[in-house]
Length: 153
Image 1 (cartoon, helix red, strand yellow):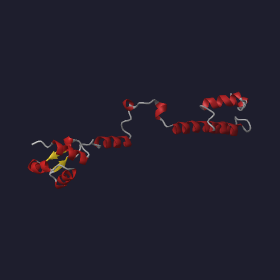
Image 2: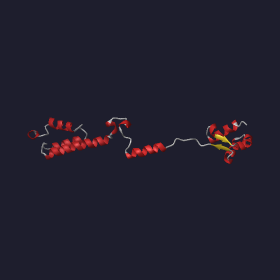
Image 3: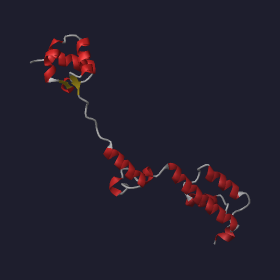
Image 4: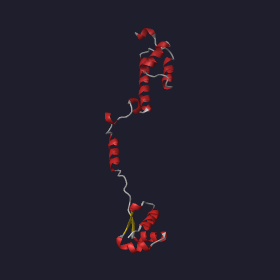
């Protein structure tokens, strides 16, 4: 018995494809008599026409991977896409750089190798992001005669 029209109507009502509409063989006569959307809706409610749930994509593997990532796994050489600079946060790079520059400045000040007011000037420049590295800072200080020459040896 062909019930294509009823199947199509049921699919339209349930907003699914025709393949997901299953008609109970024992209720085939009732289904054949149904010709309106209201009739079909009634049969769906009665359970004579069944709409099969669609198959989804399981999140099990994704959850498992997420747990591994949280634990710090799966970070080996083969999993990396970007370079070292791309993977380290910019803030972490900045923190490391500024700490080194400030430590160097502090050491120079404690050894009394800086001229008057040079410490504060260099500190401010470092804070403003002027220096690329520790070496750049020392070169700048040397070029601008901020380091005492007799103690430099």
